[in-house]
Image 1 (cartoon, rainbow, N blue to C red):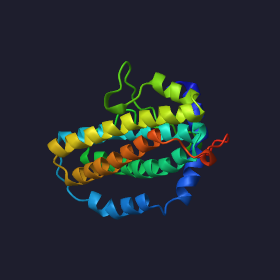
Image 2 (cartoon, rainbow, N blue to C red):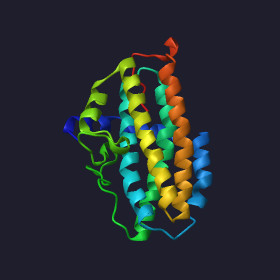
Image 3 (cartoon, rainbow, N blue to C red):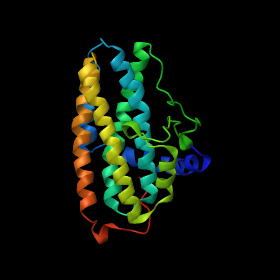
Image 4 (cartoon, rainbow, N blue to C red):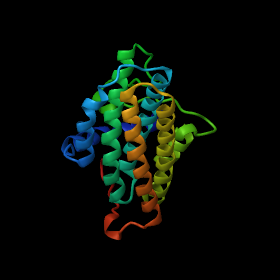
Length: 223
């Protein structure tokens, strides 16, 4: 990731944290909280569970970086409002996945470390795949294009990229449901399939329906 991408993403992080603090009463957050005890069950695991956790952490981190870009570049307020659910659920799942890897004595996820340790500039060095986007892991060129796009063109590009990214997460979760052994991983995987499949449908509806003119502002709404 280039310095310009890191710097631009970092600018919105303080606003992200403030928004999350004020939005903890959302239905999605409440549902995730109620599931927390379930995620503590099931100590047995296999390599498929470990690989899922190691892959899903950077996958989620990429989604959070996309959300930060959208907080600056999106034209329609509906994009920013929609992103609150993505940020809340995926940030919480990352915390569980990190904890499980530590409990299992497994290697941390590749790229799961802050480039800078200070709260206002925590940007994660998630691994990029060049020339293709397996499981929706968009490469640096795609992320830089997203960062450089604004207005309604941004909204269209962002939604298409996030749909692709969500489809990758659903595929990863479906795979671990077939091959994994950990019950807590399976519970999370079922949540991912359910929640992100629903979000894909919501994003497709947004692509098919122009935003209300009153929802468009020249001022970027910080997430």
